Image 1 (cartoon, protein in one colour):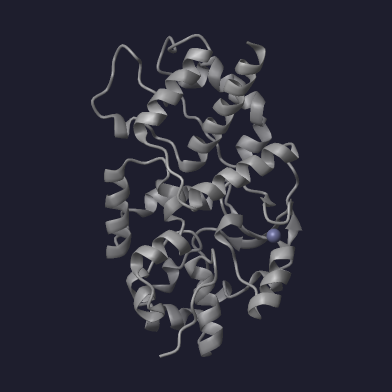
Image 2 (cartoon, rainbow, N blue to C red):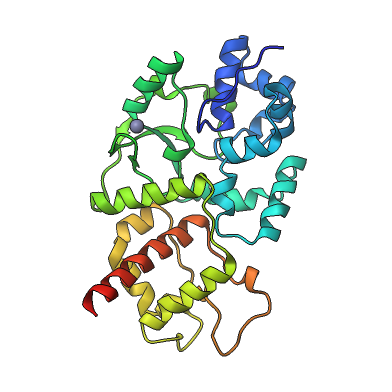
Length: 300
Ligand SMILES: [Zn+2]
């Protein structure tokens, strides 16, 4: 039976929107009858119905997960054990792994919305005859298209759970609002490129993170006097590097009591669980550290 194949970097929900049109189905019916999922579970960023999608598109689950879901971004800073567990849960259709994906949709107080690049839309229509959503434009804190170096347009389509009766739009049909630049262009571009690299498979080991975060704390005078990293000068410096508006807009919340690395004199035997951060937070920390290390080198 005919079912469209996903385009490069197309998330599965975008594929389902196109499939419903190609097959003449309403979205709720496609989700229920072909993907065996409750339409209320339809989401832009949470992976669902992977085995059904694999059967319909004849693309292996592994390939779908890596090229058409946000799994590579979510796992980029997690241990291999945790990554394997999340993968298995997603394939099994368990609701357990979704907690690892929810940050991609924002929070209750600050929801994220699907974004697109109008140049990419024009190119996709020229190349494929139709527009589609791209994963790389939907990542937290990414506000420009790296391909065309122009600001993305934001829509009123939620990045998380969507109303299946009203989520059948492709970007060419959505009015888009320009996202106001919250950072200087070079930094916005760097965040977008690095985010995309995670989506394309770049990963950090937990051991590397421990070393780098210890290095970050050392640059600001060593271990914090208390585990309350929120009071640490490294965090104050990070806030002035990105600015409070950008951090607030991308939900970079640093809870009181949350640590980025365990105290050196009290190494924890459970290193893989030492971080409570999302991929977006890890990425911002690492970009910040790269800039600090480069400026330290310059002044030596
Ligand atoms: Zn573009």
